Image 1 (cartoon, helix red, strand yellow):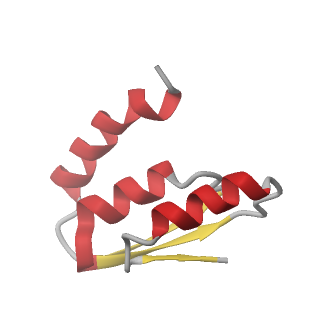
Image 2: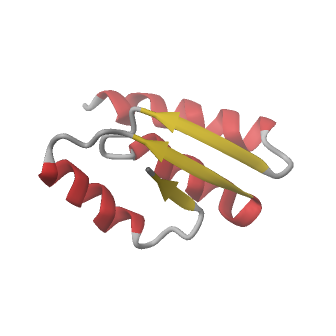
Length: 77
């Protein structure tokens, strides 16, 4: 089991229980964006996720871009 698969159920519950209002998330070290996509999915249009990474690996960056197509509330630099 991958590390993010182990923590996502916990993160999902915390987000659902504690994030009630609009929000902004800054994720530093996004890589594939698994956590960022979880935040964006759970909070919908109530906020924004800003992803920061240097994406040295082009295939990982392209994977992130492909997954991002389904999310209007994720931004990246």
